[in-house]
Amino acid sequence: MIRFNSRNSYFKTPFGAIEQDSDLTFRILVSRRVCALKVSIVFEGERAFKLPLSFSGSQGIYEEYSITMKIPNIGLYFYRFEIENTNNDTIYIGKGYSGNAEISPIAPWWKLTVYNNSFKAANTFAGKNIYQIFPDRFCYVGKINTEKHNNIKPWGMLPNHIREEDGTLDTSDFFGGNLKGIQSKLEYLKELGIGIIYLNPIFEAASNHRYDTGDYEKIDTLLGNEDDFTELCAEAEKYGIRIILDGVFSHTGIDSKYFNQYGNYDNLGAYQSQESEYSSWYKFVDWPNEYDCWWGVKILPETREDEPSYLSYITGENGIARKWLRAGASGWRLDVADELPDVFIEKFREAVKAENEEAVIIGEVWENAADKISYDQRRRYLHGNQLDSVMNYVFRNAVISFMQDGDSEKIKNSVLEICEDYPAPVLHSLMNFLGTHDTERIKNILGSECEVCLAYALLAFLPGLPTIYYGDEVGMEGGKDPLNRQCFPWNEGEKEITSFFKKINNIRLELSCLKNGSFEPIITEKDLFGFCRSSDEEKCLFLINISKEPKLIPELFVGKTDLFHGNTINKNSYINGKNFIIVKY
Image 1 (cartoon, rainbow, N blue to C red):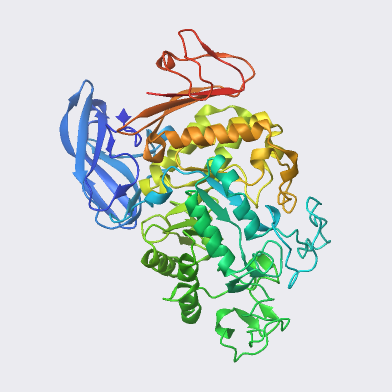
Image 2 (image 1 turned 180 degrees about the vertical axis):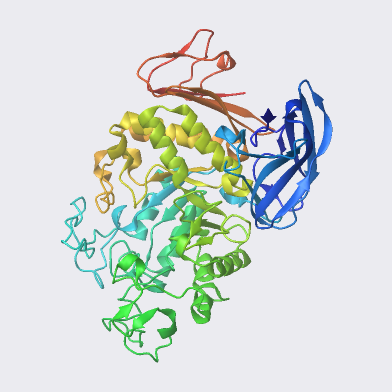
């Protein structure tokens, strides 16, 4: 009786999120049996308003109603249709399966993200592959500096992983990975097809993970110093590689110049005196021993991110955000973005973009970032004045789920939801990954290197930037942290899986349609998933078969050369089990 699909360009143009003040057209087909008198579209969210649609023609038993409009205010909107008929009834039309219309007063509303028309993607990051490094465990070169850390284990031993009864873990063990070590592997990373390195925290801290920042102004002495960092960034740029830093601003460590519980710093910390210049940065309940801390972890006192002096320290003219961009960094990943207030993220963006318009800001968000609610507040990450991109846990979960259950309809809808909800500048700079320092190793989840390769191939051709968590490309294993943070096994030589990662990444770099091309699913069968990525210049088709049995390749692939395997696809060709193909138009 009612036909509308938010993902079909006939019914909604353009697809997905829109720029503010741009043309937006809706069409809906209503059966004559409905006896419609008035058809309206209703919006809620950032603004609430209701607009009538105009009759614009007939199609068989259907009457077409349409409207072309503009929305001037950025924000997240929710919309549905309402029809008043000759019986004085009101019919409510909301979102059903796969974006189709559903007649129901309780059906979900469609979402529409309207973003700032000045929001642009960082061109220097377009189409590149990312590599995440946990600095203490990647590589070391030279003499290990034990000035502040003397619990250095031999490379390759297991990290401390036995937790106390209360769940705490001794994180004072180090292996000595340093910036010089990373620099020594730049050629390796270039051959792997990497264009961006994301570093877990590198600033002075007491723990090996360094999320308990001691001093934002200093590189941890075990890693090197500021000159080493600047040199690393300069050398990386020669290889076409940019460096992104981890910004941990929702909390510091208790062993820091700011809190200074142990008195290891010369200045007066907030724990030592209420007269400290840092006292207002923390949320004391009963000074000095009762204070808000991150997820109840006492060594991580929470900061007041919107407190003026703290905000100035991080985002001011000579603040931390700009200092490390000046030193050579090309962007920031914001740890636990959900716990940073809007004012902080907006000021952080202003500082970063003032220093380097091409620098990127990626937020740690584990859910759909377009409609995320944290602490009872709807977040505004993707409207063009906060984040450039987010860590894409949604795609990770979708890929892993598909590898385990073969439900191609489910992964299709997961990917399309993000494509529909996210602004184009965000979509094409998403940090896509199969694992991070916060998750089990992907090999532990999927069970074999073959499965890891298949999953990465699929991830690599979805919208966004594929990310390798250091060591996944050599088949490293590891459960929950810290066992997912073991030392890179450099003495084992190149493996077949490494050659695979190199090949797939370098094929990606040759395909311009992957930088900002559209995503269109074309095959959704059990265990078989195919899609097209297309831009004005070129198209590529990707098809994956995760079953053990060969499957007939659709005709649209016929006559094309598989870019990965090198063979020409003929009529009645089959794709082998546990395999994939890539062709270019």
